[in-house]
Image 1 (cartoon, one colour):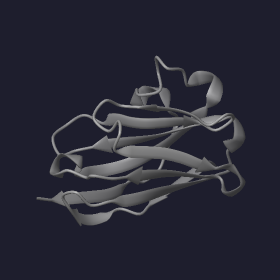
Image 2: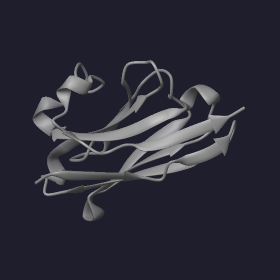
Image 3: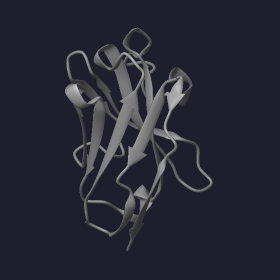
Image 4: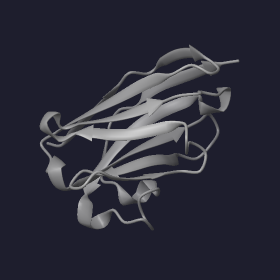
Length: 128
């Protein structure tokens, strides 16, 4: 059974930083697309960043470019999301998601419908 375990959320002040981790098990991690999504209260789930684990290629949503960095440690089956210059509007539940690489393309990687496997989410709260 594929499992994704997200962690690292918490409460920070505006301008602060957090690093989220997502450990993936029972999945072909080395040839996958792993993404981070955020769901803010009353809003749709938003794609933030995606990494292709076979070659490390990354993509970012406009709202987090220049502030968030996605990376992976393939030998640990883990993907990270380094979040800097956090703003109150970054508040939400952060989910990691996994899919076979062949299904993750620039056109689909920010769509939640692309991903089959999801973690349980970790709460991030940014105060002003």
